[in-house]
Image 1 (cartoon, helix red, strand yellow):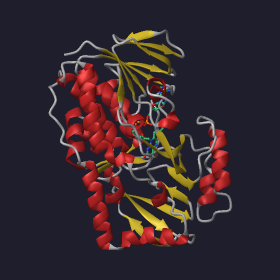
Image 2 (cartoon, protein in one colour; image 1 turned 60 degrees about the vertical axis):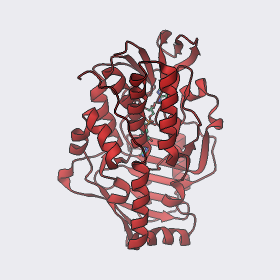
Image 3 (cartoon, protein in one colour; image 1 turned 60 degrees about the horizontal axis):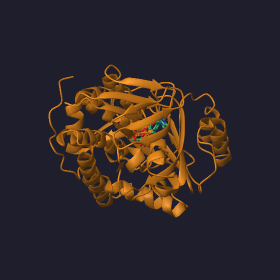
Length: 391
Ligand SMILES: Cc1cc2nc3c(=O)[nH]c(=O)nc-3n(C[C@H](O)[C@H](O)[C@H](O)COP(=O)(O)OP(=O)(O)OC[C@H]3O[C@@H](n4cnc5c(N)ncnc54)[C@H](O)[C@@H]3O)c2cc1C
């Protein structure tokens, strides 16, 4: 067992997953999170196949996830008059088990909050890797040293910027933005399957989350110079981009201001050859993100497991462990370096909207698409890592 001091930046899915395993291996884990508390919100995320199941089972969270799952969400694609044009089955977007992102973060946090130190409302401002340790400055807390630093701070990772270089070297804007608005209003398979509604005009999607999930907007746009934490500016932009649209869009826009949770980001893809540099490693979206691609949460969970497992397997020789982690995850995360969910969610023309809808009414085409998503989720031979101590 290790007595490493490890700092993790970001307390969402990847950060909590890595924290869980590292603490169980005996590390002293500190998690710094910029938000004042664990961030709620987000649409449903999902897990699929044996790889995900194995990791979630070993973490002891599968039963909790199943208990709080949405029970799958079928998406009715509707026209302006609310007539159904196609149904995207929950099996396609919801994998084997689907759960609201906020619920998943909460389940993971319940496992880490007792054994790890959490510094909310704070962020790293500088990293100095001396070779023997990493000296870290924070915005609020006093400077401290750690044996390793792990960046789990998402698509716009500050850890990546400080340890690897500017965002533009690694993150490609894929021509779309998305927003998720509204609280998670329920969960539980007992309620049966959920239904959401999708309405498209060229380059725009409005998705009514239904009884359980928040609303979502996806729209085509070149990269904008928009302050990432200016919610008022982001909501004003949404109102402008969706003004004049019919269906239920006006009421969705009306409740933006009172929605509570609001999350806005670009659809972007991260491409890196290596996720580690010296004593710093990246996990989750910071390393292999591809917004709304449908596999980010699975990659984050598997990434945390592999990173901690490789450290344990290498007897805490971090250089050897990081080299293995780079290799294993680069192979597994190949899917994240391809693809763009934007054109699927908000096709650019009426013809492309029709073609997207058609692919869900054609059984052969649908079978093919399902096969593709299956193979992405299971493309890894997970090692069995040394057994950690009991929880
Ligand atoms: C509130 C929220 C809503 C989301 N909604 C959706 C959704 O609807 N659909 C979807 O597909 N994906 C959504 N995501 C992204 C999804 O969670 C990830 O794609 C995936 O689960 C991988 O997670 P991650 O932990 O690597 O990154 P993320 O989930 O993005 O988490 C990164 C964490 O790091 C924190 N952070 C960022 N910068 C700093 C910093 N400088 N210092 C300290 N902490 C920092 C963030 O506050 C966040 O908690 C959402 C993420 C968040 C945070």
